[in-house]
Length: 330
Image (cartoon, rainbow, N blue to C red; front, side, top):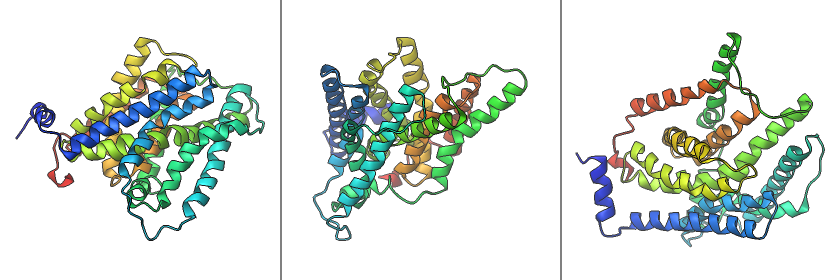
C-alpha cells in the first residue's frame, strides 16, 4: 500500500490529469477573486462591511467550475430570480442589523441601502439551488435542502460540549472567559442571533461550497479523508491572510499561528467528518462553520474546554478510520 507521502509525490509528478487541473483552477479562482475584491475594498477605503466581498471567492469559484451549460428541465425560468430576491432581502437585513447593533449596542432597526450590494453574492449563491444549469443546481442543492439530524448535530455539538464543561468548571471555581457584550438581555439575544446568521450567510455560505463542496470532494477521490483534510487546511488557512490582516483589530503573528495553524487543523478534520457522515451535505458543514465562529463570541466559556475538540478529532479519526483511502469514492 502506498504511503501518504508517495501518494502526494505520484500525484504531483504525474502529467496534469483532470483532477489536478480542477484543483489548481479552483485554488487560482478562489484566491484570485477573494484577494482581488479584498484589495480593491482596501484601496478604495471602503467601509468594513464591504470587505465581505472578499469572502466570496471559494463559493464563486466552485459555482464557476460546476457550471455545465446543460439546462435542467425542472427549473422554472423565473424561479431563480424570485428566490434570489427573497434571499437578497434576508441577507440585506442580517448584514444591516449585525453592523448596526455591533456599533450602537442598542436594539434599533435601520436598514442601510448601501449594504444591498454585498448582500447580492450570498443571495445569488443560495438561489443556485433552483438554477437551470444542472451542475450549479447539483452543487447548491447540497447547501440548500431540508434540514436533517446531521445539520442539527453540527449546529449544536460544539456549543453543547463547551457549555457543559464550562458550567461544570464554573461550579468548581473555574475562571470563564466572557464575551464583550453589554446591554439588556433582549439586546444580547438579538445581537447573538444576528451574529450567527451573519456568520452563516456571509462566511459559511461563501466558503463551504468551495472548500468542502468542491475541493474536499475532489481530493477524497484520490486521498484518504485525513490526508484530504490536511490538503484543504493549508490553502484554507493561507486564503484568510488578507482578511485577517485588515480586520478591525489585526491579529498578531502568535494569534494567527494559534488560530489558523494549530487550531484550524482539528476543525478542518471535524468538518471533513461531518461532510462524510452527512452524505456530502454542504449545509451540514456550513452550520458547523457558523456555529464555531459564533460560540466563543456569544457564550461565556472555560478556555481549557477547547481541548474537547482534540478528543473529538481523535475519536472521529479512529472511529471512521479516516487514514484509509476509499477507492469507491472515485
